[in-house]
Image (cartoon, rainbow over all chains, first blue to last red; front, top):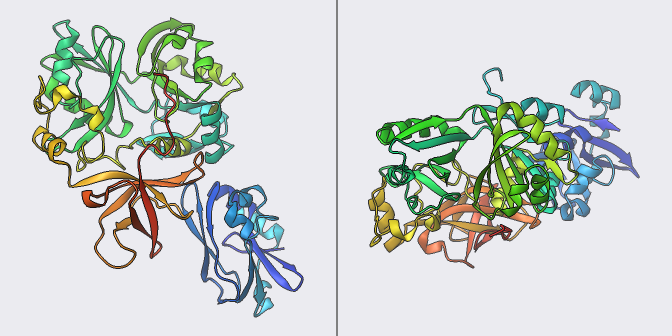
Length: 119
Length: 376
């Protein structure tokens, strides 16, 4: 699993990249109450703001961590945003991407690096 | 953070693992470990304990010895009828300014030979100065900074408080009593800011933590932070000063006409006589230009404070703005309140909030979003 400075995690699964937010991010945001997903089959560029989430406190954007195509979004968290807080690095995943250039992940942090990053 | 004031419960909040935030000059708990959603639902299901010691407690004592003189004096600053308030009863009111706007909203209790006021933390210094400027001829005005104030709210509140102060059981909504117990003299009102049955209890500051912990020893009682306090009051359709009420909003625009009793209105025995009466009485008769309305967004996206409101899905000028908006954990839906021009304030109408550049529909609804459960 790889991690970004924007508190997203990326995991390879069946040739796709599954993306979610970290446990740390979920805790900091507080209980999520709203998730707005992008359409599938759209091409996105790294740092595009593609998902809107709202917690009990405020709205935030989730950015595309790499270039690629959105293949699937997690409708379960749209219906039940709390799932993100309950299992942020499992059932609370956000979307699956087909990477244009998987090497964009090479420089991302591993679990140890991320743990140090959030200190 | 060094300049922030602390309530008598500050150390307890830290020991309970609260996440703290600056609020009205105080370092206050915004949430505890369970988080805002669970705290909100706990208060509705059982009982929540809130530290509201940052609020201002003020005694208004008539120099004549007759509480009616203090009541009549206070009526020169608030549109509520205070002279008619019975001994042992409390009433909601607001300080108005000469333009008919609201300087602060407050609770006013008649305690036999004096009045007891509870005002908002952010306004308390200004309120004291206001009272001293206008009422010091007739009243002694005494701030009470050394007492704690705790709100205990929810269906289990009565049982929890009665275990420590049995007299609480016999109170009804908006009753006030003074009672002695192991924690010293308690000033109790059966009221609150959640729409739940519950109490607000003032106690000596040095007893506040012991008293709070005695309540928290009851399994039904959990501490609740400012985050859930806000979503609870919004579900209950209760205004927040500084957000939904300010010096530009009149009580009539804010829908607080129920807090202006008949005797203070046009044709009443004590008609007018408060700051801004000309505007406020005219609005009572002719209707205000804008009104505070409840809004239920049709989708799941919350419409938060500052969201501009429009009559149409496209084009046109704003007809108003959201002043409070959040997700309602009990109603499991987003909810907002905001001011709109009177023409668009009718219940059942559809208006549009502009969220992230998109106009999203919302329905104008009656408040509260969730019915109150006061023990009347």
